[in-house]
Image 1: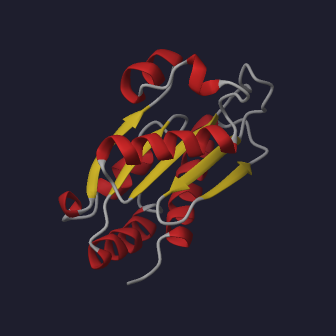
Image 2: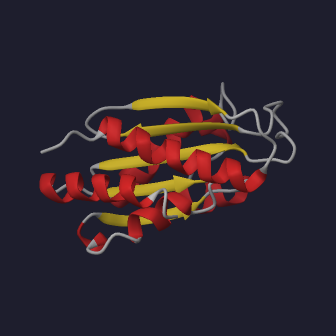
Length: 161
């Protein structure tokens, strides 16, 4: 968490200065992105909500994403990460949404992605998506790397006021 906090502080400062808000949907990071943003004092000014969308049932129950919404693509892709980000943004009325999906390890996922694979999407006034492959099967290290990259993407996307 200590390595994530400086990034979270930068994001918090930008969100507060712009009077923007954010909502987070994460999977393989297990809530680390939300935890980092909430660790900054004053988070209630910008953090609207977060969810760990780890299963198909969670995706349906928490975000209303059904099979019809998934036509033509699969989880653990940039397209899916952007769908998560957009849906969180819409459902919470936030300025920004972030979606993360991947395979932390020690094995890959059922879609053929190796351990150490994540896709992260940001939806807001601008949209961006990235894929990170760490090449590692170490679950905890991947969770940290994925959360760090997600926060870095937010720093890249959210301009300073």
